[in-house]
Each structure stands twice: as structure tokens, then as C-alpha cells.
Length: 192
Image (tube, rainbow, N blue to C red; front, top):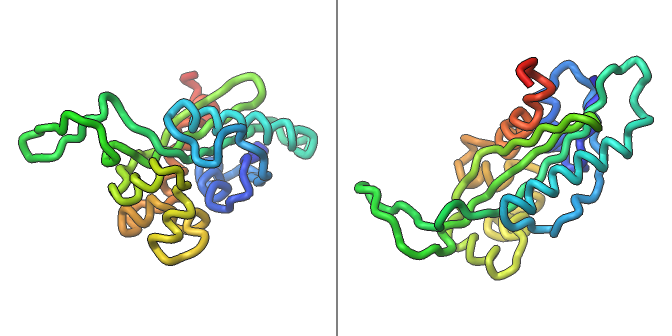
């Protein structure tokens, strides 16, 4: 199997290689076709699908002819809210009536395609700290905000926001691996 990941980020390539351990996995930067900071599930999912389709086209002829299956994988991180925006905030399950910055989550979506079939899936969702969510709502991008908050550079190519929010219990690679596995289900299981 030959799997092309639509990103130059090594974390996304590594997450995909974990899902397809026996495959040749390559990474190729392609545009997502969505904003730099995708907002909402629809835009984030569309970015993943756009990347999967674009990278498959880019590398379609590069795969060795002996490779049977060729997949394009796209992964996109974004921020989104869920449901009615109420946040449960006490032991009795009482919820705030108004949506706020605390209703913003880091989300990740992945897509996989062989040109005919598609798989789309999401990874874990992590609620953003209010101070970070406020900056995102004010128009900043999560990656640079995390670099600023942590006093580091290229957080997105290392532990990611997921790693920072969970004190390393869930790295960005781990989180993206879940999204890729969910998207790859039609290519991993005979049930589809």
C-alpha cells in the first residue's frame, strides 16, 4: 500500500504511518482550501477532504506500479463548538445557559480516499482554556497562540496543543492517529 499524506508536517505523517505500519507513507504539502484557522466542524472536515483529494492527485503517478492500493490522507485541525453551547460546570450537571469562549474545542478531522471510496473520521476534542479560546475568537490562529503561551516555537510540529492541554498524556501524534484510524476504517475493515 502506498499512502500519501497531504501535509509537510512530520507529526501528521507519523500519525498516518502508525495506522498503516506496513505501507509506504510519504508526505506532500498541499493546500487545504480552507482558512488558516478552520472554524467549525464543516470547515475543518472540508480541509481534510480537500487535502486527501489533492495529495492523491499529486502523487498518483509517483507510486511504484507494484503497489496495489494508493490512498490520499488529509488531516485538518480546527476549533469548533458542540450542540447548544452550554457548558456543564458543577457536580450536579448544571449548565451555563449562555455559550461562551469556554464552549470552544480543539478538533481534528481526517479523510482518506483511493479516488473512489472515502472515509472520514474525527479525533478527540479538547476544550480550550478560556484565555486561549478568547484569542481564537478574536481572530488569532491556535498554533501561534500556543507558541506564545508556551514560550516555544513550532508547538504544532511537536507536542501540539493536545500535548500541552493534557500535560503530555495525549500528544498531537496520538490525537491525529485516532482521527486517521477513524477515517481509514473503510480501508482497514471488510465491513464497509
